[in-house]
Length: 317
Image 1 (tube, rainbow, N blue to C red):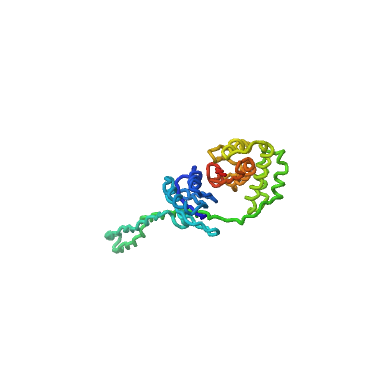
Image 2 (cartoon, rainbow, N blue to C red):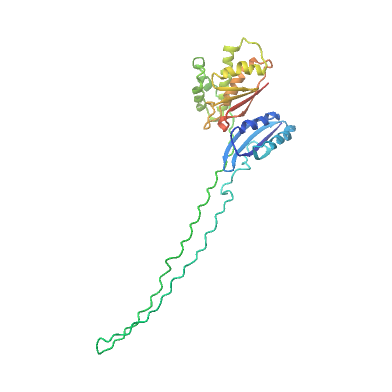
């Protein structure tokens, strides 16, 4: 198995993560993390995938044929070594804009002073007085010199794309989860406020594991309450008969084969952390006991909190 980091540049954000996630899954890879960043050149996509080394060429061929990519790059992913996006604007570079030079200042010649001939002296008395000639005036400084054209303001430097920030994963805070779900039977399905409180009450490294554990316990409770007496099902039937009806008590969801599209997730807003781990844990606790295979894998294809239109979970057994 190998881990690859895929960086790509696209013009539009809408549906980008969903479509790329389908390429990833169709070629045998699993999406590990994803990020969308706005840049002056377009939308910068960065995803990390994990899969068989023999499938790398087929994945690259699928990405090469994707018409929404302006360009892309595939490289081995190294944990703990954040790499800047290859298409991100660099600080201090103004997209090739070079301001034109200021026009040369051409001085305007001052008008020449003209010497005047003094009038002949008048005879006022027997004494003739000669009037001295009027002295020449020094030319005034040129007052009509053209003003220099103002220099155009420099183009603002584009913001750098923020790199990945890796957190040290911690175990779930079981005490906080127990507290959040203490009155589950009374509050369900109005449990979103309790889940948001749980997110804020645990340390950042334990947030993902704690939300997943809360989802698993909630899903297992729903299975025991509503579906424990039913027969074993294959994956498609379990999603249709159990997964979708149970999820609709919490969110708006649609089934697309073995994928679930969650619309407007209250746990995955654009200014918060991803809450898809709760829904993944919920489906594990809910569907795991109902499957003939007793095995379930859930892959987050994309998430609303990372800029996608919907949260999409891909299920396999």
